[in-house]
Image (tube, rainbow, N blue to C red; front, side, top):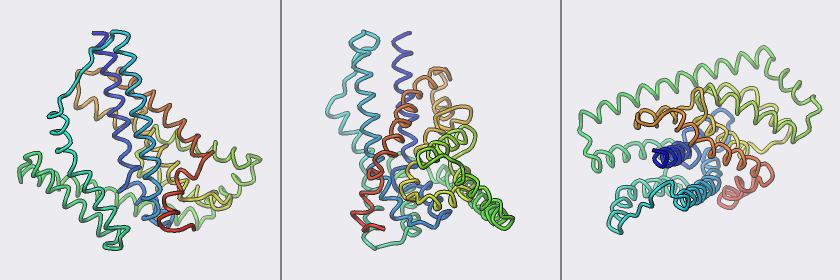
Length: 306
């Protein structure tokens, strides 16, 4: 039972943390919402997420590898091996979706389609792949599309409400006053970044990513612009903070998903499995603050410096 508990914590933590990377690696809904809220280039934002996403994948993989080896040496778990046929079968199931990401990226940056057109095409191809590879029936597809329509309508309603919220905040001079007050504090550049990251970290405990972006950016944007903060770089920092919020209680959407698909796992085991990945992502944010080129080098190389 101990071996099963330890290995389940690592497995659930890896899945929960890995699931957050979907909002960092393009195509990312978070970057689209951020780009609309701050009027920054969505194509540049997508490029900015590639290298940080790959590095986080490498960091997560290294941690999982080291942890599993340690468990094997301590006789806490039995080593599990897969045949070449099993590995190849798994690759065939995942390969088309990887090709879809590559095709979307090529279409966008090759000038073939706009971000909106690429999003529609990716959604259509995703439905086709899921139906073909996972034997999803037309009736199930209909339920999926209805659910997607409801979620999309919810997001659009939030965007509309946030636009009205931002307008009223600006019209009443609340945003400008708050920005001036924060800028006048003797924080310095690093102090400001620390306060903003703590603010985003706490908001992630209670709100989903889209709501955080739409509610916080009307206030944060003037502060960032006043302090000459690169909005492309900040988008990556913001997104990783949002990822942390997805695997931390009390909301922790990914934790609830893991609990739903694996009801035999206790909430405590899932939470303990996710905590090392929270620390890894927090450390990566610190690294980004000292080496911002991690987020900006790819868009600068592809699209030129701003």
